[in-house]
Image (cartoon, rainbow over all chains, first blue to last red; front, side):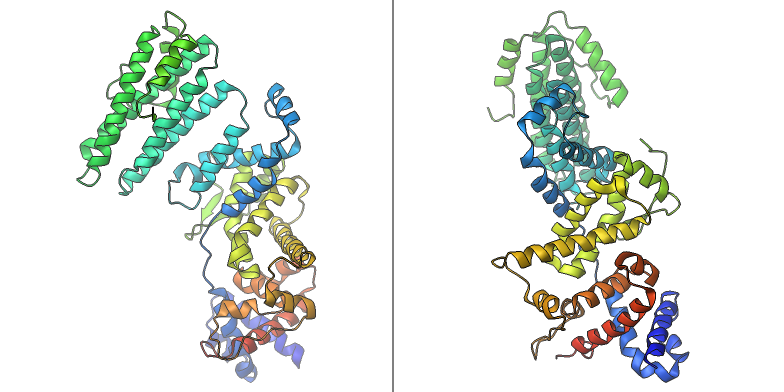
Length: 296
Length: 196
C-alpha cells in the first residue's frame, strides 16, 4: 500500500511538471487525494522558492584565497622567460580564469556589457587586477592599462545610455588608467615608448571627443559632471599634445573622430614612426610629474 | 575564439542555459582550457549551483561554496566524463561534505545547530513552539538527505534519473525517500503559513 502511495505521488509530480493542475492530478487518484494534496502543495511551494541574487563574489574570493597569495617567487622568474605556459599549474589555472572572464565573458556577451552595479561587474574588475598581476612585461602592462581605460570609457557611455547619468568615478578611473599606461611606458625602449605615447595620445583625443559629445546632450543633472570631467579631459589632451610635440611626435589631429580599433593602432603606429627623436625617460618623467588630474 | 556560435539561451532570470546539442563540443573545448568554453560553462551553471547551495547550506555560505565548486570545475574539467550536470552536482555535494567535515573537525568554529542535529543523529529538528516559520526555514530543519533530495528534485527541478546519477541511489529508493521527505517537511512546516 505504502509503495503505491509513493509511486502515485511521483506520478502526480510528473503530471504537474507536464502542466496539469493540482486538482486535475488528484482527480485521477481520488483514493489518495487527501493524503497527497498537502505533499503536492509542499512540492509546489518548494519549486517557488526565490532565486538567490546572482553574485559571483564567492568564486572570486575562492580564487583569490587559493591562488593569489601563493604566487611563488621562483614561478615568477620562470613566468618571465615563458610568459604563460611555463607558469606552475595553479598560476595557469588563475590565468585561465582571468582569460575566462576577461576574454571569454568579455567577448561573448557578459563582461563586455557589465557596468558598475551589475552583478558580474566585480568579476571584471578583480580579473583585471589578476591579469595585471600576472603580466610581467611592461609593454603588455601598458597595453592592459590602455584596454582598461577603454573599458572604463565604454562602461561610462553604457551607463549614460541607460539613463544612469555620468559616472564621475568611472571617468576618473579612465583617465588614471591612461596615465598609468604612460607610466608603464617609462621603462620601455625609446621606440616602444614612442608607440605607447602615441597610442595614449589618440586614446585621450577619443575620450575628449566622447565627453564633448556627451556634454552636448547632457541634461541639467548630468551637465556639471560632464563639464568637470570635460575640463579634465581637455587638460589631459593638451598635456598629451605638449608631451608629443616635445618629443617631436605628431599629436593626434582627429577632432570629432570616433576611433575604431584598426584605425587607432595604425594611427598610433604612424604617430610613433613620425617621431623625429626618441623620447628620453628623463624628458617623459618631467611630463609625468605635471600630469593634470593625477593628484600632483 | 568562437564568436560565431550562439549556444546560450537566456532564461530571462539572469541565468543562461547551454543548448544541449552544443554541450559536448563546449565540454571538449573546456577540457582543453579554452577560455571561451569555460566562460560559457560558468555563465550557464553558476546561478544554478548558487541556487542549489542557497537552499542546501543557507544564504551565508552559499556564495563561498558555489565559488569553491567552480574552482574545482576549473581544476578537474580535464577529467570530466559522462553527464556534465551530474558531475557538477557531485562536485557541489562533495564541497558540502568537505565543509561539514571541516566544521566538525574544528569545534571552535561556529556551527549551525540545526545542521549538527540533523547530521549527528539523523533526526529532524523541531522549530521552537510559537515560531512562525517559512518554507525555507522548514527546509533548513530537514534531515540532511531529505534536504538534499528536496532541493535537487523541487528547487532545482531535476528528474529522478538525474538525481540517481548524482547521488548513486536507485530510482525506487529516491521515490520512497521523496514521499518521506515531503511528509517530514509537511510535519515541520505544519499548515502553510500557520504558527507551529
